[in-house]
Each structure stands twice: as C-alpha cells, then as structure tokens.
Image (cartoon, rainbow, N blue to C red; front, side, top):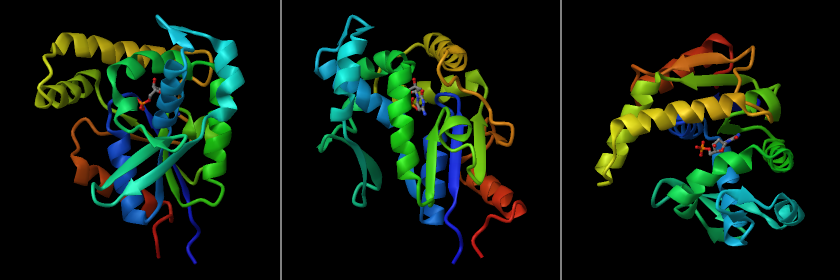
Length: 232
Ligand code: DC
C-alpha cells in the first residue's frame, strides 16, 4: 500500500494556504488540519474566560487552564467544509470574528501555548495521511514531512484578495488599510521570538500571485510526481 504522507504547508497570511491544503487533502483522500484554527480556538477560550482584557493576556491563568482545552475537527459533507470544535462546541464562525483575529497574534506568540499545540499537532499526524497548514509546520511540527510547501504572493495581491472578499460580504473597507495590515502581519509573523515564520531549507516555494485554484493544484501534483510522491 502507498505510504501515507505528511504534507506541510506554511506561508504568509492571506495567501490561500487553506484553499490549497483543502484541495490537496481532497485529491489525496487525506485529513486536512488547520493549525491557525487551533490558535484561534485557544484565543477564543481565553477571551471567554476573561483571561484577555484590553489586549493583555493573563498568562498565568491561561497556562493553568490550557489542559482544559480540547480542539477537534469534523468534516461537514453537506456544507463541504471543515468545522472546528472547542470542547465539543462548534466555534467555526466565532473564531473567524474580528475580536479573535485581533488577539490571536499575541496568543500565538506565547511559548507555552505553542508547545502544547505543537504536541497536539504531532499526535494528529502520527499515522500520516495529513495536510497541515500553518506557519511552523515544516520547520517545527514536522521537520521530516515528505513534502513542504512555502506559499507566498505579493502583499498587494493578497490585500486585493482580502479586499474583494470583504467587499463581497458588504463590509465597508479601505484598500490601503488592508494592505498596511497584511504588511504588519507579515512583519509580526516573521519577527516574533517563538517559532517565527520561516521557510524550511527543503521547502518548495509556491508563489501563487498569478495562479488560480486549479493551476496551483496541478502545480503541486507535478512537484509530487517529480519527487516520486504521487499515488501509484
Ligand atoms: O492562519 P490564520 O490566520 O488562521 O492564523 C491565525 C494566527 O495564528 C496568525 O496570527 C498566525 C498564527 N499561527 C501560528 O503562529 N502558527 C501556526 N502554525 C498557525 C497560525
């Protein structure tokens, strides 16, 4: 039987990592794990329990309650989407809200949070057959992953995609502000002390500035072929 691989996808914010990861998991019949959703769930848990006030985190309390956090994923076939559960409750919408988005960078910079989530992520991948996306998957979580992709696209293109998404949702947004936010998050992700976003030496760089969904999947399948990783 074909060995079940571990595929690590890292890269900047808003460059479509989750779209690629989902498409690839579907193509290969693998499980998709969104590690950003895990950091977002811990953030939501901390907010709901009053461990974050005005952007300040009560690290002692969060650390003391970390083991009470259970995060699971379920694929919902009717909606064709992955749903994230925090202690049994679906939080898929709640973790995408503005308040969680504003606090998640600070929570994901905490060493004790990262150590715990990395441990959980490694357990999830123990049998292979997963596509996991995040910022430190190919460098810290699975340094021996069979395939590592590092995704990027120009800040302007990522900002434009984010702008189009928000406009489609009817939100009044300003392109310049979004562009500044994209650049700010790149800086935060790449310069934080704990596991900064870094390209693994053996990662394949996928710049999807000018590729659509289908083209990027084909591009990856070709890379897998070249490396002898495709299904027989
Ligand atoms: O991919 P995302 O935007 O849902 O990620 C949310 C936040 O979590 C973002 O600030 C980066 C951080 N993150 C991280 O530090 N490490 C990961 N493996 C995944 C996400």
